[in-house]
Length: 428
Ligand code: GTR
Image: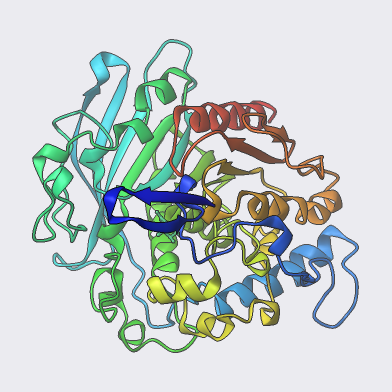
């Protein structure tokens, strides 16, 4: 806590926690984390212990998946129309021959006016790159053209958040934002490492505002628009969109369908975790600073809380999740169970030291408490119960690092994801 003297107004006031840019009305002190008991990961609803892979796969895993569907992310409405079709819109050589670029429209439906998501795909043609190649796929926040300087990349016509710094007005994207988030998508570095990368704008799937659930993929389901207590929120729609993108990626001869990793940052890290839990075709799952509703243990009430996230973003989760505002202890689940749903696949959890809002320690602990399931498979999870210091990656089948710095996706993060993915994919 600091004290600030405001010139000759003679006013003294307190500036708390803002040294790290955090909301001062929330807890950032480890000593103030309430005592809590996590729901048992390795005990069936009928009270029996889970002792075999088979019990996990056939009983406990489906139980946990259902808990997350019912109480948190929501379930896919039964009347959702699920057909997809694909159209290649543009392709060519990328980054002076380093790789190949293609832009593909994935339509959610047969009709010409079906909603669609545009997917930008880069695959490497550098010497030594394997064909078919492993690939990272993840959604982006501002449109595909912001992830790259390449001028062929289409500008989204979907709703965007207004932002005068990048010329986003009247919820329309602009040319001046081209490449604005390229630092988060080091495509050249990724391709040099032998990986492909695919991305799509999350707002193509479902615009990120509380809009009564009429647009995006909600048009494909009448039930989705009236929303039962347990029908999906936006995070689940984005995750579903990632699976439809996956439907296309697995058709590509130059991409290895068994080596496709899903990743996401922040709200899109919550999304990559839910996508990985719901769709096991994603063979490796990465959460970058996903925080509350992602990798962080909700019961810790450290930084962002369940009540706060449901209040600021009432459209992200199912309505039932609101019942747990200020009542995290009543949740029949916590986020270590979400991490466990990835097993036995490799999963990576990344935090940043100044990102207290996302509760780095809570993110580490979720990985730690998921280890029991990996042990069933004869695998080591994090392999440690100590959160490591900054810039010191740890872990075996569950990877973790605490990057020094802010809430962001940095080159350092990507270096670790590439290293982790290489280690697991090359071992096959
Ligand atoms: C914040 C939100 C976080 C995180 C972040 C983001 O406002 O509180 O849960 O999702 O947005 O997605 O950038």
